[in-house]
Image 1 (cartoon, rainbow, N blue to C red):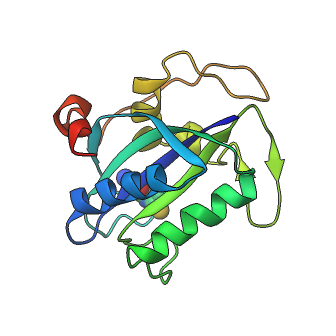
Image 2: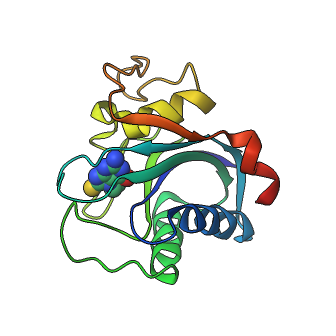
Image 3: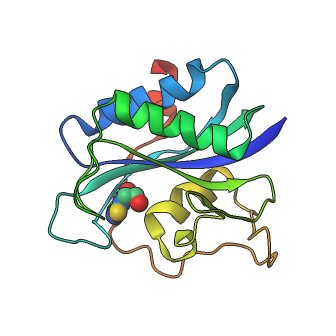
Length: 165
Ligand code: GSY
């Protein structure tokens, strides 16, 4: 069995509904078990900043899928929830990014793991460290730390929505 961490974000429409449906869809996949869920954070947009605030969370999963199959499952969930890929870095119904897959270091055309920008993104690191407080970079071994959590605000504690999953 493999352990992966996935960041989920939404900034269009019913953001909470999109996050919950994404987590439910992961868990209902026969080869994926969601083992932990972070709280939900409201986060200022990073990259293209002229867009609405996001809701973000991170889940850990146990899966027998290989990384490419897991990517495909994530894209299937994004498409099912109405994600349209238009503006790069732009608004999205829901976005699922594989952050880590075991201690693997993957540099393929369609998949880079660890996620290349995760170390600079507080909207990823704050929820990740909530559920994996000692986790480090698989290649360097350096523990992830949040340099600046400005723009990341606790929006709903995990205990308040876990039972609805
Ligand atoms: O990479 C995920 C999509 N995304 C996000 C996001 O999920 N949250 C915030 N705060 N900013 C973002 N910019 C992009 S692109």
